[in-house]
Each structure stands twice: as C-alpha cells, then as structure tokens.
Amino acid sequence: MLCRGGSSFLSGHSGCMLLFVFGFLSLVFLQTEAATKKYQFDVQVSNVSRLCHAKPIVTVNGQFPGPTIYAREGDRVIVNVSNHAQYNMSIHWHGLKQYANGWADGPAYITQCPIQTGSNYVYDFNVTGQRGTLWWHAHILWLRATVYGAIVILPKQGTPYPFPKPDKEHVLVFGEWWHGDVEEIVKQGNAMGLPPNMSDAHTINGKPDTYAMEVEQGKKYLLRIANAALNDELFFAVAGHNMTVVEIDAVYTKPFTTSAILIAPGQTTNVLVYANRVPGRYFMAVRPFQDVPIPVDNKTATAILQYKGIPNTVLPSLPQLPSPNDTAYALSYNNKLRSLNTPNFPANVPLKVDRKLLFTVGLGKSVCPTCINGTRLSASLNNITFVMPQTGLLQAHYENMKGVFTPDFPDKPPRAFNYTGAPLTANLFTSHGTRLSKIAFNSTVELVIQDTNLLSVESHPFHLHGYNFFVVGTGIGNFNPAKDPANYNLVDPPERNTVGVPTGGWSAIRFRADNPGVWFFHCHLELHTGWGLKTAFVVEDGPGKDQAVRLPPKDLPPC
Image (cartoon, rainbow, N blue to C red; front, side, top):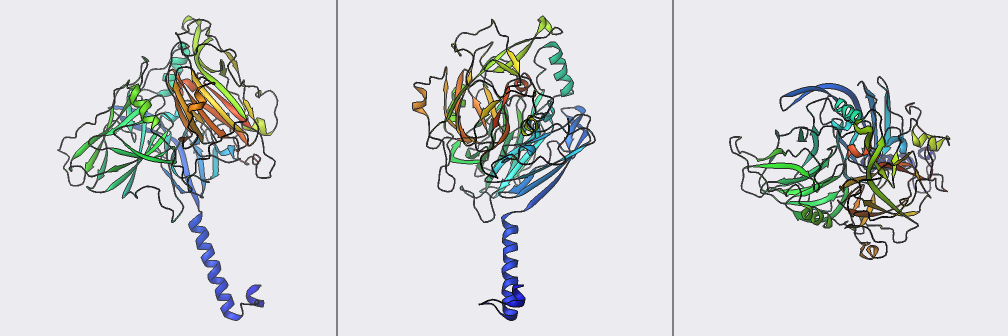
C-alpha cells in the first residue's frame, strides 16, 4: 500500500527500496534480539556403566547427564518431552521464573500431572530478564538421580558479561551414582521407614573420575557449575588454581576469589579460572560438606584440568579441599556472596514488608504399621508434613476445584520453643495435610526459615519455584525478631532461587509476589522432600490483563 501510493517523503522506487531495507533491517534486528529454540527430549532407558557396575537408567536422548539447553535472554524455548520410560515423568526448569506460566514449571502434581508412559508434553516458555547458568531435572520420584542437565542463558546479542570475557566456557554438573536401581532402593527404605542407602559415588558430568578438560596457558575459562546431587552439599576446588566467583543462581555477583566453592543441591555457580599456572595436569575435585554426624557418601569425585600439550603420563596433583565438617569455611564462603547491584543489574530488595512468615524445619515421625517400630521418619514445616495431591495444584487453583488443598498454611509454627536447644526426641508426631500459603499479588514477603533440633539439627537447601529472592540475613541459633533484622543486608544481598539454611540456624529471604500461580517451596534434599518437607504458595492474580495465570495448554497431561 505505501509503496504504491507513496507518502509525503517517499516516492517511486526509492521509497519502496527504503521501506524494503527498513523492513529487512527490522527483521534482522528482531531475529538477533529474540529467537525460538526448539528441543526434543526423548525420555528413555539406556544401559550405563560406572565403576564396573552396569545398569539400565532413565536418560534423556540416551545421555547422562542429559543435553544442555542453550538460549539467549529474550528467547522462546520449546521442549517436546516424549516419555518412553516405564515411569511417569515431569521436567522442572530450575530457576526459570515462568511468569504467569506455571504450566511450564514442571513439578509433578504441583503445576501439572506427570507425563504418562507413551505420551508427550510440550514445555513452552520465554526467557525473560534472566541470563547465566541454570539447570533442568526430573521432578517426580527420585528420577533426577539420572535425568538432569544444564541450561545456559547467554546475554542478548551485543551485551557483554560484567566481568572479563572468558576465552572458553565449560559446563560442569555434579551428581551422584548408585550401583543399584535407585527407585528400588528408595522403596526398600520407605517400606522400613528408614532413609534409603546412600549413593556409591559422586560424579562430575556423570563420571566419578575420568572427565577431562583441556586448557591453554594464559587463557581464561568460565566454569558453569550446577549441583544436581540429590542429597549432598559439595565443596569444589581445582588444584593449584584459585577461582573467581562471578555468578550465583544465574545472577551476577560481585566477584571474589576463593580456593574452594560451596554449592548446595539445586544451586548453580559460575567461576572464572585463569590458566596461568605451570603447565601440567591438575585434579578438580568435589566432596560433601556435612557438619552433623549423619551418614553421607563421603567419596571424592575427581576430574582433570589438563594443559594443552601435556602428556597423560604426568601425574595430577590433588587440590586442598576444606574438611568435610568445616562449618567456619562454609559460613565464611556464603557471607562473601553479594549482588552486583549496578544500574544495569540492580538489587531491588523490598524495603517495606507486607507479610512476615516464620517456617520451622523439623524432623519427626508418622504412624506406619508395616515399618520398623511402627513409625516412619517424616519432615515438616511448622509441624505440617505435606501430603502430595493426586491432581495438579495449579489446575485445582485455576479451576477453583474443591477438596484438593486448603489455603491455610500457618504464618508461624503452632507454638514457640527453643528451636536449636537440646535435642527434642519426644512428641515428634506431625500433622498431615495439603495446606498452602495464600499470598496477595504484588505484596512483599519476608520469610525466615528456622532449623530446629527435632531429632537433629541439619542444613537444608530450600528452593522457591517461580521466583528469585534476596537472602537478607542468616545466623546460627534461634532467629530473634527484635534484634536480628537490624543486621540485615538490604543494599546488595545475594539474589538466589535456592538458599542454604545453616545447621542449627536460620536464613531470612525477601521477595515481591508479582508472579501469579501456584509455586512449590521445598527442601532440595530429595530425602527430605519425600518425607514431606515442602509446601506451596498460592499467589493471587493481579488486576491487569497480563497479571493473571495464563490459559492452560491444550496438551496439559491428565491425571
């Protein structure tokens, strides 16, 4: 139309040509700014051997770990998950906010019913306002023991990293390995009311001791690290090399140099390693941090950082890892984490709080006639052991179904006590229910997560779906609401999606509830999640058209 009729400043062929060029450049600009990335995930059983033990495991596309998803900030990602395994399946895109789109979040029976054997489901989501390293994993049963992989979100085209540009990047995903069938091991433990047998090894990129990474002297390497271990917080170090922490949970942080990092299950970290040492072969190693006398797989997994041109006959040197019970190092490391807090990456910490919550973390017992002593171990928040529904909670909320859950999770424990005092071993029975916490849209929330000495104190990595939050405070002992908030960091606290609550201590987080839907909140130790250490937030719709939960997709799996 415009080419035919012209305009006040365009006429004839020159006007058509200018419009064509303008349109072409606009198309190129849009393509460089946003793209659609499509992936096919075939969930299937594959035979894998580690440490001379071969067994069939559930994989994605036959890979262990699974494929890495690559996207840029602003991209649309479409993942078609086809389930060919004997187990029902769901995939969670850990750390992606999924604004108003909980249907793509993935936890089974929370935002969707699982994908049945022989069926498929398309996860369709936008990567908005996020960049860095995240990860994905199965979110049903203990299947994330083998079904997991990394997510790499690159900045928009032309946007540099806020740290020295690396010469190369490597993805490192930590995990665990069981010689036996993990699901059968869990069933045996549940039948007896006891924890299942611990894993037999830790792994780096699916291998306990054979993964290798080649580097060149004088170059910089960005290590994109995710801890996919089910139950272990891990120390990681590289022999002879310090690391510069530049990102946590896909949020840039103020860089600092350290000899070893600490990474809890569910967390991700990016570090820069400068290959400026004497050329040789160096071990990278992970081993668990556990500062209470609870049995864990204490084996160290290793990989090789090898300078180019160095023969494999050169013996690597081992790194100096902190002791497995080095609480002081763990606390010191976490205290160094800060948000970048610059005009381009502001730390928008809520200063005014509309809703204050206190959740106590406890271990307890539940009646189990078939178990040893007639009881099984349970876990609870505010003395409530969460009961998984048989219908997706988001669907129940969206369709206003009755009888699936109650929105009455308490804002504080039923009674106050000396949470971290002498161990309490009596009256450990918990109440059970599918009780959720209802939150008004756009309200600001402060949640204090308090460990307790019910049976034993223990550290807990808590993950909130659908949000990042700011860790404004942490401490050892009982949280004191009259004194501790005065020491909060409200300027540049670390922004995360998974926070480690210290053993016998507390962590305080703040976030703005601006993402409507039902969002899972749980301990990322799979053992504790299975015991009921979880709940969910129901965030109400906002007043705007784009501030309400989207329509459910047509292929949403049925229960």
